[in-house]
Length: 147
Image (tube, rainbow, N blue to C red; front, side):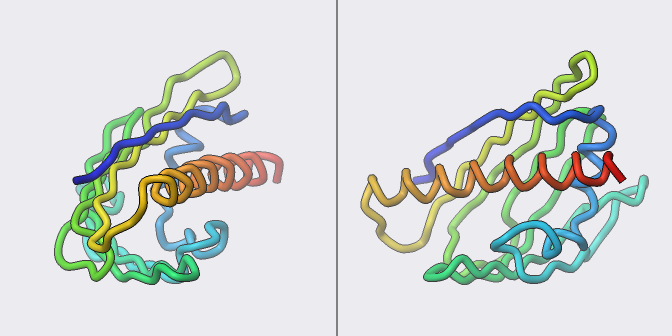
């Protein structure tokens, strides 16, 4: 069964700039540590990814999987579709709350791993994934805003 976890961070940019980085899936290998390659398989009517394939290499965990996306102005959510060697399911989202000159971003993720994993190791892996996802997103958005 998938355990859900969430975390938040404040990014010094408006929600549209944060969403633009999230939607630019083909550039994830440039700024995410574990995603080695991506391919957008389908786009929605606004040109945003509707389905994308990922190749992940997180040391002991290597996986290839496809996610399906749903976009709104302040939220993107996704689910695992098709086959994955490591995951039984994945459901996640980024939710934006516009603040003065910043955006509060909440990242939520629930992953059901196909192999048994001790609770303390699973929680440590979740924390690493959550921290990396938010910190790498913040760094990428704010570095692009500074250019």
